[in-house]
Amino acid sequence: MATKFDRISGTDAIFDSREYLDDSVVFNSIESARIECNYDMYSDHKNVIILTAKRGHKVWLWTSSTIKDDTNKLIDICRFIRDCKVPHAEIYLKHDVAENFSDLYALATLELNYVVKDEYSLAVYEYDGEKLPESEISDDEKIIRIDKDNEEHVKLVTDFYRALSDEFGWNNKFDRKVNEYLNMELYALVKDGKMIANAAIGSPTEKYLRIKSVAVLENERGKGYGHKMCVFVVNKIKERERTPMLYAHVGNASAVALWNKTGFKIKDKLYLIKLENN
Image (tube, rainbow, N blue to C red; front, side, top):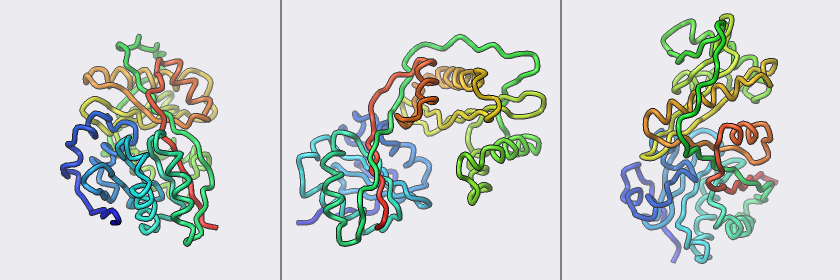
């Protein structure tokens, strides 16, 4: 009998199950997605949670670790995601079920001409140490929290991301992305009236607070500003008695170097299956 996946809310009983809580859910961002309400959520009410982005192509999948031996359940998940018709789907899931899932997804979606385009890991980093020594800030620098109702702050954010929009591929979604950052807990390093680096935090769980981004203007890189912002937000999170965590693609050498320098350790890896239509 095929598995039935029902639409659920963030209060469904599966979120209170022991296995889900023990998994820390930091590995798949489902807890933060559940809070942010940017995803449609589905579940079998037992050991599977599927989230599809209301905008975009991301699919986050949580399953129990034992599901890797349940071929029928994996095929049902594949077919359900197929029927959601998520364009160019990027499916994030724990690495211990990924190998089985990748092969099955290619099989289960054959009639829709999907193919597995690329496979790689997304590392989950955690900082579990003490507060860090504060980085030295020069007299002409200051770190401020961005206030979306402050016109000067809005201009700082807009100018900063306009300078990075080509690099980030934001040309067709610039205004929306700027608004997203204005609504985050965003800290900016300002020098001579210009934002040269920033860092955002959010997506709280009972244990974790996520560093959502650390960004530096291209002509200011290599001067230690990224590390300054990373130290600043790590200490902000530690003050709240939470554990800092973040996600990073394992192939992003500059980001990996920054997290290692700051004292982050890889907690786990997520598998990413990218799919494209033939």
